[in-house]
Amino acid sequence: MTMESNNRMIDVRDVHFAYPHNNENESVVALDGVSLHIKKGEFVGIIGHNGSGKSTLSKLLNAIIFPTQGDVIVSGLNTKNHENLWTIRQTAGMVFQNPDNQLVATIVEEDVAFGPENLGVPPQEIRERVDRALAVVEMQAYAHQKPHQLSGGQKQRIAIAGILAMEPECIIFDEPTAMLDPSGRREVMETIKRLNRDKDMTVIHITHFMEEIIAADRIIVLDKGKVVMEGEPRTIFRQVKRLKEIGLDVPQMTELAYELRSEGLKIADDVLSIEEMVDALCQ
Amino acid sequence: MSVEIKNLSHTYSEGSPFEFKALKDVNITIEDGSFIGIIGHTGSGKSTLIQHLNGLLTPTSGSVLVDGKDIFDAKKAELIALRHHIGLVFQYPEHQLFEETVQKDVAFGPKNQGLSEEEIDQRVKQSIKMVGLDFDAIKDKSPFELSGGQMRRVAIAGVLAMEPSVLILDEPTAGLDPRGREEILAQIKSLHNQKKITVILVSHSMEDIGKMVEKILVMNEGEVVFFDTPNRVFTEITTLESIGLAVPEVTYLMRRLKEKYPEIREDIFTVEAAKNEILKVIRG
Ligand SMILES: Nc1ncnc2c1ncn2[C@@H]1O[C@H](COP(=O)(O)OP(=O)(O)OP(=O)(O)O)[C@@H](O)[C@H]1O
Ligand SMILES: Nc1ncnc2c1ncn2[C@@H]1O[C@H](COP(=O)(O)OP(=O)(O)O)[C@@H](O)[C@H]1O
Ligand SMILES: [Mg+2]
Ligand SMILES: [Mg+2]
Image (cartoon, helix red, strand yellow):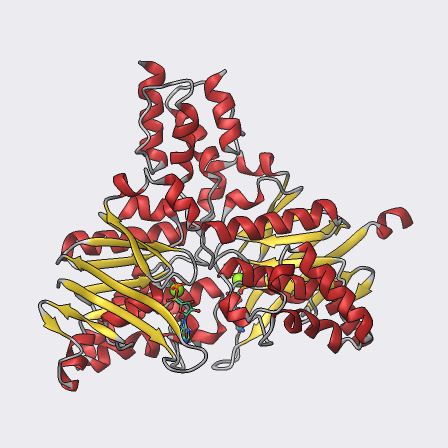
């Protein structure tokens, strides 16, 4: 029991959340009895249709909003308790979609320093944290540049560095690649995977690009405010029909394998990547 | 409507220390009724370019001709009339939405076009449906109470409701779920086919571009690199990658399969085409 709870990064227990509606007296149910657990060091992908509750969930994890019912526990702390608020926000950092409105300062390193400054970290340590964070996202060379001169992918990596400088245990990425060009997406995904693999960072990655989570430890599927599927990428993406029914998709290679199978070709139903497809077709 | 872009350059904050040349001597002609894709790294000038097409930005030098008429030479009234025919869906939908309710927001464009109440109502309903939203469930909501993807759909509906002759979409599928992406692209395609409107689609999805467009404009650092058919553009893998772009996943796959199946075609951009080509070479 204690072993297990020590290993828990996030515990969401039967959470309901409704947004108040200002026109009428009805409210909008965004999450409807969600329970999930995320272990320390895990890489979890979250997918779901527009309006399924992904961003609502991420705001609950970051203690920006609070459950109407149920509990959200981050690193052992319940978001309900006000005194936990700042610890929780520092423990679980967030990176958003739009690279253009996440950076606040006019110089890259000042932007990265912004978070720890607000936490009251002493200047000498801030310096060290900023250097470390920029090194992790491989942006040291840009420390003195102006953020608006960077590409979208680079801006997102600076946003990630800004979060890292607060030394969180977990980062929630809410569609961080949605606005990026192909190389920006690749840069950001490599950074996220490296953080998880080498720095043991717990990662929650929300996305509409199925390819980005084929290497996740686990995928959670939301549909109309409920968790409807949960499992390893191979187990999830094998269910092509079911995913399409709820407005989602599978990686392109999985789809191609599915199509080839339905034409009678003998090919595995859990092909995820180009590599696996080449193997399957060239044996 | 045809759109001709002649020697177009745009410099932001000219003369200040922040001066930035975002477009450098762009020359392209977009024929009436064509479907064009624009790709390029972030900051390559895509949004700057298309904002010239409906007069939101003014050229530093050069001109834009719509059906042969220089839009920056036109009188104000003419420019306003022209804007009714050129619909632009912004890159960031939250910049486009401002009314109290979704219904009012979508009605804003048609209202400005001076249509009758009845016509407006009908267009609003139709376009909200086209973007895959439930009219009755969403009409009275504030646009700012929506999820990111729902907001984008509303922004697209607002432009569709104007029934423009030239439809320009700046990364319209960013943030849309897979079904939404598919459905909205299919709607755009069918509008283009049925009403012969000119469509300009800016996208980071090489798959969407490969599937949808007749010609691709490739931008890099404010300049045109290619303006050609997908077949020609997507064979330039090395150049595309060197400027931050890529080719569709299935195109990469076909290249890899060439080692084993030398006869396999490489000009394949969709899963459907890949399936057919693979079956062909495997079954002989
Ligand atoms: N500020 C708000 N006020 C009222 N309702 C909201 C608000 N934000 C979201 N909602 C509603 O809550 C539900 C869940 O929205 P949420 O933003 O969590 O979805 P999402 O899964 O992140 O969608 P997307 O893929 O479009 O980003 C939707 O029905 C949405 O309309
Ligand atoms: N309002 C502005 N002021 C100054 N520079 C700008 C402005 N808008 C865009 N830019 C700059 O112009 C270049 C092209 O931007 P943009 O057209 O938005 O590119 P894209 O749409 O291809 O990502 C970028 O370097 C960007 O930073
Ligand atoms: Mg969201
Ligand atoms: Mg843009």
